[in-house]
Image (cartoon, rainbow, N blue to C red; front, side, top):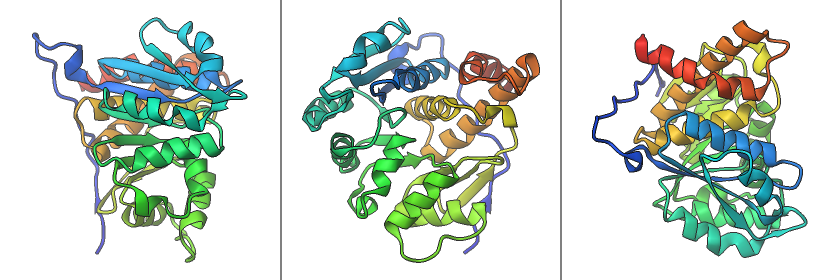
Length: 289
C-alpha cells in the first residue's frame, strides 16, 4: 500500500483570551551531561519559544547550577549522576516527574551508558507517555535490540542518516531501503513511531503518510540545530497536536527560522542560537500567512 503524500502544513489553533499556561502543555526535557549543558538549554529554550506553557529541564546534578542559570523561564530538576552522566538511580525521580508533564523530550547531550539506557527503558514501557527521542537517546536505543517490542509510549524519533543506519542495524537483519522516503516509511511502520529523518529535505512519516520539508538551508548544519528541533516538536505535542502533525509543523518552522536567520546573518555564520532566536519570527510568519 502506497503512502499518502502530505503537502499542507498543519496550523496551530488560536489562543482563547481566557486561557492559561496549563492549556499549552507541560514539557519535560531530560538532557545534558558534563560538558554538554548547552544541548539541554537549547532544547528547553526552543520548547519555550514554541509555545509550551511550562518547561521543566531535568539534568545531571553536576550541571544543574549551569543549566538553571541559563534561562529564568524554565524550572529545573537535578538528577542523580555518576561522573557527569545520568545514573540508574535517577529512574524513579524521572518517572515521578513524567507524571506531572504532557510530553518528554529526551536525548540532547545526554550521553550513552547504563543509566541513560535504563531511564529510556522505563519511559518507553509507559503507555501514557509521549516521547520525542533525539541524539543520545537514539544512540542508546540502537543498542537495545528489543526496544520497539517493549515500547508502549507514543514516540517521535528524529535520526540523522547516521543514527538512522544504527537504529536499523540494531533492530533488523534485512537491508535498509535505499531512498529516504522509503527509509522513513519502513522505520515508522516497523517501530510504530513517527520518524523524522533529518537532512536536506527532511522526511516525516507515520508509516501511512509522509511529508518532505522544503524549508531550511546548509547553514543549519551546525551543532545544536537538532536540539532546537526536538524542543519545537515537544512543545507542539504538548499543545495538543498529534505526533505527525507536530513533527511536520515543527520541521517547517525550524527550517523557516533557519532561513530567516541565514538571511540576516549568512549561512556561514549561522549557529543554533540564531535558529532559536528566530523561531518567533517563523511562527509569526506562518500565523499571518
